[in-house]
Length: 575
Image (tube, rainbow, N blue to C red; front, top):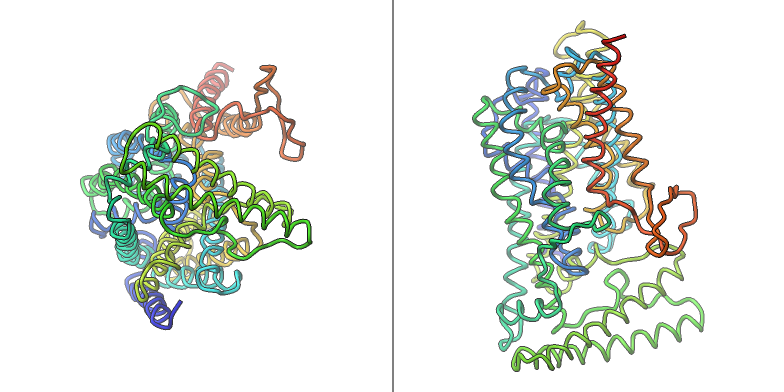
């Protein structure tokens, strides 16, 4: 990056620290520090909800998924409007009436302290694990963009987020989230327009869509019901409903946003903002990834976006790499000529030739990735490096710094929210509850700041120790799917199963967690039709695929919790 871009980036990071910490003066009480005295405007809370979920995961990972695959990932978000209506009807009034600090306080009155602590403990574990990923994943990309050591980018993200969240509390978090969301959207829209205007004149936007459609890149909906397929309409509407209802309705990082508003009406409005805006926003980001694919049909691109320099270490590998890169270069030129021809002719023969040349190029790309994996003795992919490569090589000077700032903003907007939520649960559900309400407001505010610093430091250290991830956004959703369904089941027992009691809810929750982990390790042999449990330490036999993909773990966990919780509750009452 040029000195101009560095100046823009440093100015943005400096402003973020100032903007977040200046709200510290409003956090003199525990309610002010954790809930902003329930005085935040609905639109700010709504933007914070969107920014918390979006993060660098959306900025980097989603565009990469569309580039490598297609747009079917948008199906994951089809359930959001239904989940938001469900939450607005049932959970928001319930939380508002209870005037609680956390989503898990309400469990104790009916199900007892053990259930409250177990559920909140699962939140601490799940979000604590995810927070390290949220810091680590964009740090790899930013290290490449900035030419800095990896540990330094991790420290920059971790330290800045921890600093202003520790000082400013939830008000500082929401204030910075609003600006960070604006920077993120500016960067995405600018890149989309930049790609559009730099396409060849004879192609244009309509021609780009025709080319993408020829390669099935514009595939959005998959109507086939298949539990082994990650993304289809059924997993997006049914399975993802449980994920989204639990994430937005029972995850403290989201619940805390609408608890900062002053009424049920404003809490609902903050959630409905996401219900209306999330699918169009996600569709646009995926379309940006598709347009990026078309852009690199007509512009040079490396065989691997992850490493622009050859990685071969011995003569045999050097020969193999030279052969692969030659094949890639020939395929790239052939594909470009075929693409121009198909835009002009638009007949089946030229279209088929274009598809074949694209397949040849991707075969060379796959061979290069396999060679890198062999040399590095590790799984290698470049999904998370595609969009950053475009930024670094095709965005004008000055704007690069702002867009890189947008990636930082995307990372920070999720980290600060998670830190504040982890602190709230740690203080309210554990420290304050177990120690008793014996201390002053000043003590709890001071303790909250100390706990925020602890979680920030722990997440930063775990990010430093973490390996590189395959796809940022998928990994975070997978981590959440291990926990969310079971936690949602406990809240359903609370609201609608009147006969459920504490022992039933607790055993149901534990059973739900075990069922999720069991189904996650269930594999299907496509040749014999046999099912087998294969644990992570076992060698994966050939021909096996997952029996159900990760989104379906959510309804599994919810169903098991409800059924077991109801049965055990009845049995314990009869006994």
